Image (cartoon, rainbow, N blue to C red; front, side, top):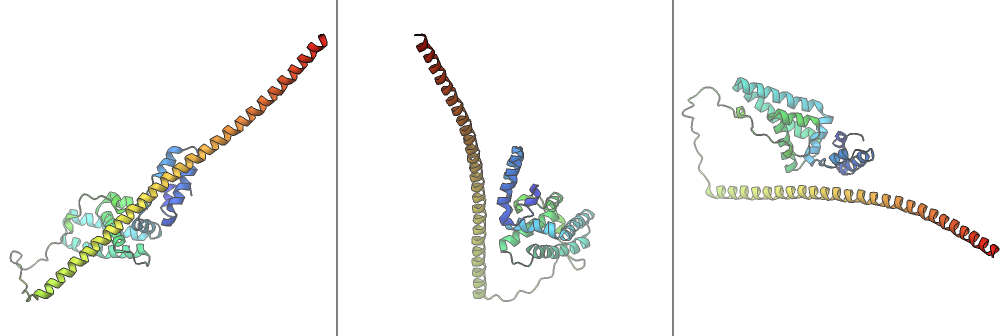
Length: 267
């Protein structure tokens, strides 16, 4: 692997190890700034990984999305209600197709499905978001901050009829017990959904915290390895100096004996 873009083409579970290896290679090549930049690359969420895989494996689907976005912009600019209605229906169909294609036959969780829809909707709505998606380096739906959604996507009523006095649909008699039970069921379902969303969010935060800790430990490991290498080099130097000192001491002793022997002879 030679480029950071390659990281986002890997299976998600291989991302962290590959990022570490790529950063080490950059550091070994004498580019610590590049190594630090690679270490900061975020691991994609499950939904983001599916989007990145879609970009690489199904470029035609991404082209369809970008084409639809361009058509929606043109229809909104021209104010064509008929075109907007047609394109809105197409948008709904395309979003469902993109989610299915990205999942590749799997059954993603509701949270993952919602994040996929958020990413694709952002790409349809905003040109910058579309360009970012096309790069295939999405890390999370939070990468896409769209200030305003399409105002022209709220479809106007069909022509005909008295728009100022819409026809009233006769209301059916309400079964109060059934209504109460239905409302309770909705409340319980929404509570369950909120709990699931919180659990998913907490899990994502836990993963992020764990990844940050892994990066910290990797940095500590790198520092320890460098310290060990420096210590080994210092040991080699010290041993060489000790041997040189030992040789010098031996020579000094021999010289001393020679001098002492000379003095004894003269006496």
